[in-house]
Amino acid sequence: LDARDPRAHRVPLHGSAKAALPCWNQPSDIPLQLKILVKNMKERKENFTETALEPSKSQRRRDALELRSLAARLIGLKASALARIPMDESVRAAVQEAQAIRSNVARKRQMQYVAKLLRRNDPAPIIDALEARDNEARELNSRHHRTEAWRDYLLESGDPALGALLAERRDADAQSIRQLTRNALKESSQGRAPASARRLFRLLRELDEERALPPIPENF
Image (cartoon, rainbow, N blue to C red; front, side):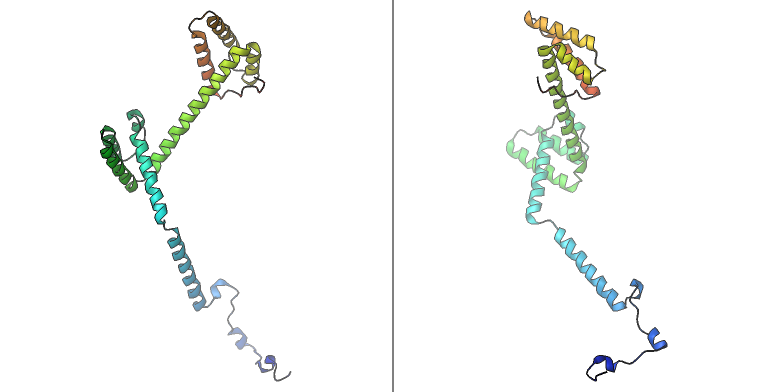
């Protein structure tokens, strides 16, 4: 080999000399210095992540506004609804005190105190309970509109509407629905109180409570 070639200066290894060379094929064989370097890198990454996850000033302000909104929502509940919301007794007492205040300034001050208590306690159970209450209210509203739509459809279309309902809900009482529909139309033509229409609405609502009524046909 040419003397300028680095390979010409290599010393051949034999026997035990080869065994003395470090083998880094397995993680357990990584030199201690490299292990320390990796550990330090991980620690710096973890510290960076924790710092990056710290809430900003604007985020803290948004959180405070959300807690005040939550406090205002609780204060606006009726006593019966408030009793069904799980919360710390200190929060409940502060909310009830705010509800009894008539002065706007004093009420606002008490609302801020409620928000402060919410910050100290976990508001998640309260938020979950309010969301469940909202979902229930939306479902009741949807049920009312479905029932009302089917009552109107039956009163305007008669037997074709009943046939469309029975095609989707074979559990419906066809005879009762047909009779109530006819009676409701008769009462309306005679200017009488809509007693049968109300009974028809209740019957349809009971059907919807068991299982949601189908959509009204598009040609209605």
